[in-house]
Image (cartoon, rainbow, N blue to C red; front, side, top):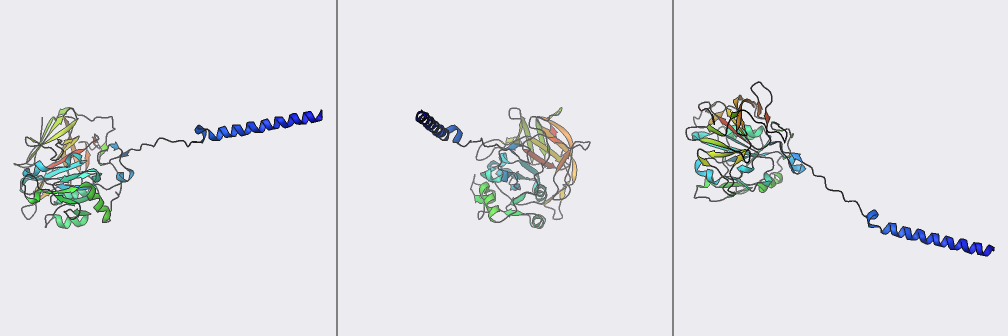
Length: 345
């Protein structure tokens, strides 16, 4: 009897061991419990502090200093302009001879294929560039006023030997043929140990929320800014895109390579004193403070503006001094003299 009981106990123990092994095998081979859990990559948005927009900027790009590039705006070369549609901010004011020059500012120049054509530095643009802590890019400079001021900031004199390329277009003279290559510009700046990280990433202006559309009562479907008897910039509101399309007098300006028209969400029309430097040729633009207008969504409102020192950022307020709320998006900023009043229709 004892032997039967012992045999039965041994059989039960064997079954128990086999069952444990089987359960262990099932657990270890179970693909659900043993496979690592793959988490969805987190999508991180960084704010472009020049436009207020959130997008998929690389974290390093979000910390980059902007790049400010002088762009040729003489009338015969406007037809070969490129890269302005991709600018975050464009500045325009008068230089010598009644013409204007442009300065295009980019948060991520590496994504811009070509910019140009590139021309020489002028004093007020250096100041505007410094207000963004931007790296200032030019081809040449006026020797009397701009050249000494270039020592006050980091600059790159672009050429074919670094990040530029000469392209003969439309039979124009050689001074109208130099373009900057965006990715090469940024590579060159890093290679030459430029300071490429921004001091801070404060927003350029007080930007409205993404879902907010700042709009005013007075109509500004067409904005006309006269800089001189020969140079007039016109901005016509396109309701479909919600942006202003740029014209030179009656001619719509389009990117030479892409054929896209140049559209900007915000247009600032700022009045200031413009006079001659002692040489009687180059223009001195007062960037201290003044009055102006903010145009957006086919409307406009009077504003105040101030800059002050070279390194100070340009700031806008309402007429009572409250910080101006600006719609997110790219901007075109005009500084015009007091001789001509802007028109809004």
